[in-house]
Length: 391
Image (cartoon, rainbow, N blue to C red; front, side):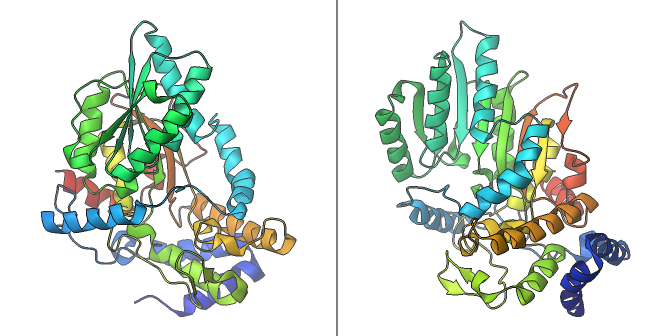
């Protein structure tokens, strides 16, 4: 049981004594406990194949739900305006520090570099879980515009409706010669070639068989290839861990009711519900295992991890309650963002987002943002539990 009185004190301490006092209090609280055991609630046991100890029938049911969820979704990337306000003010400086031009542009840079290394050869690229293939078509357009045409981008996606939309989009942009559309899930994807670059753009958190996937990627990129990822690495189902949930709930208790409408579920939430998005599908099914398994399997070349508490207030569910043109709304988001940054920097909470590039062998000059190394960003039991699953 957690001290419910803390929920009333967190926001009060921050408002009246400042962020430093709150961080110090939370450090003292968690220093006295076994963080891995106390803060990690009982979760279903997962078999080494990453199947949650579930049967093929359960996997098939989840897959059916996932396909149904996205069958008619034509735009999976729309975000509230307040997200863009936050990202310009708080995320962009991190991008600049690590020379990240943008997620799609980062993918393009790695493909362009690989193509230039072997200018007379075809450069093979794969993108995992492409959805409607908007990013992949944009990548192809940018590469062709820069004069790079000797590449083939394999779009790996299990949903045939999304692949069909991707093919139509590529045709409308005259990019069909550069893209190949492969209908497959991770379990049945056959890596029959060496890839110079494999990318995963907000897709890994939909995959259940991460060990299988990362093993295939490791073989496919060989000694010279690179794996580039932008994804979500928080708790399974995009839930908050208890140490973050305490802060969110206390903010919720004191914030105006107009901020509490859930636009995804079409309901008012007087108290924040720590909703498990993986129920009935694969949304965030093993998000918490992604970083530990990547750390175990690959060597990071570039690593940026960020965000946690702020996610709730700028994402699709509640972000539309905030008007980026209104001073009071921006000020509220600033307060939450600053609290988030301080707690992350102190290690009290852990990041929920990742942008990284990895290879099979170590690189001389690994790039990280400040002290946010992969090890610092790991939540301790997630690391130990995930590695044990790999054997």
